[in-house]
Image 1 (tube, one colour):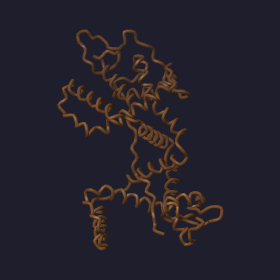
Image 2 (cartoon, rainbow, N blue to C red):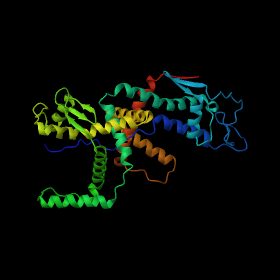
Image 3 (cartoon, helix red, strand yellow):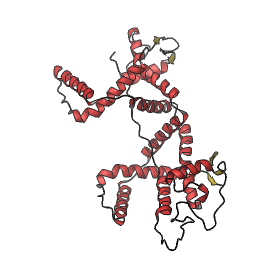
Image 4 (cartoon, one colour):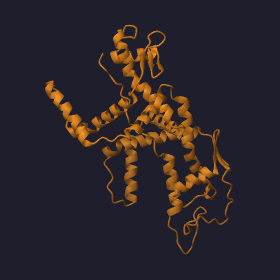
Length: 347
């Protein structure tokens, strides 16, 4: 049996930033940066812009740090967390949630609510098959960051592959080095990670109640048959597999099994939550249909905004940003639906 390794991949795009984050950022930026007449010292929304610290005409009471300032479903948001996030958001200019006007409080809570909402939905909606795959991808990405592969090493692999292709009189043209450089680097990283987890591995063939085990972890007959179905397009089953090939099959399945176990064990609860949230968001965005008309309209708005702001930097062409705009609009739709269903209450 030809040895085959299941490629899990080492990259996973993560959702960073939201439409609500942008809205809050713009709103707070307006409060902090809008120019006023220095002589009048008129405050905007209760915040004196001529003083680093907000000054209210009638200063509101500042509640204790342990106060619950909002609820998101069953989740409670305490003032300490809201203050810390606000301080981060305004780069230290405002650090008290109670000093924000009501509309800004709502926006801040919506942004804090988003990860809580997504994390809960992701846990419920993602299957028990998807979750370990997501964990493994994240773990592999972290492991890949520990490995350094030089251009010289990649060139050596490329030269060896080119030599083998010439020796075998391959009619398929060899892509230029720069074209396949990143792909080769990813494959080399994956190979090193797999070699690391497979070191001193203990693989046992059963064949009765299970297919066997990898370092004591059971591989069921169902798992073995599913892998065989994928590899042979349904032409082979565990029962029909020759005895001397059964261990080879388990060797093929072992890296995935071992990496998943390491991922589940080593990733923190927060890392797992973030990974599932990012995957769920990507999955939902992929399901959203965005018309070319909507993308073009958004691009035109960007052009008008750039012109109004007298930006010297030239706006990228429509084709260059079309994909990004599509993702942005899909993201906004997902967020809009999510926030409409959210039960957010300010205290």
